[in-house]
Length: 139
Ligand SMILES: CC(C)(COP(=O)(O)OP(=O)(O)OC[C@H]1O[C@@H](n2cnc3c(N)ncnc32)[C@H](O)[C@@H]1OP(=O)(O)O)[C@@H](O)C(=O)NCCC(=O)NCCS
Image (cartoon, rainbow, N blue to C red; front, side):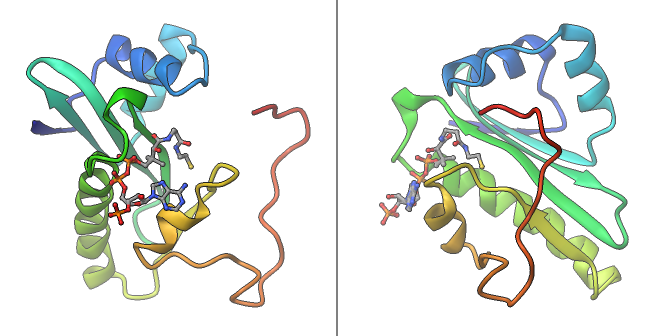
């Protein structure tokens, strides 16, 4: 397995996006989204993309982890952990500069336990309101 930072192609992103069951996105949309991404990590088996995750945000007050995805054939083999460790390393860099920076993510249903392993807590546990999403979104 090898790791690349800020290096995923639009095609690779769509390959994984489809493999985890999210469909595919318009190429120009993906290109723009990746361009506006703060940091991304991609994991390869030989030259094949098998995992990905990225950070978006304003770099000072809010960061969001998005699009953590592992090829189903490679799940439960530590790839997701590798992705999260790299994302959290980058987040630590921002935290050391901006200690009050808030780090969010929206877990897919049933994936909350995966993120709890890395220190994320449900908003309800922190006595915060629910996360919300604009109507029209379909999983
Ligand atoms: C969620 C996902 C990224 C996890 O990746 P992965 O490579 O399978 O994770 P790892 O192998 O590193 O798992 C690490 C640990 O978390 C556990 N884990 C994995 N999914 C979990 C879940 N949904 N709930 C609780 N624990 C989970 C594993 O059992 C493993 O435990 P272990 O270390 O005791 O063996 C992967 O399942 C995935 O891509 N799913 C489809 C896309 C998706 O839903 N992404 C999340 C978007 S919010």
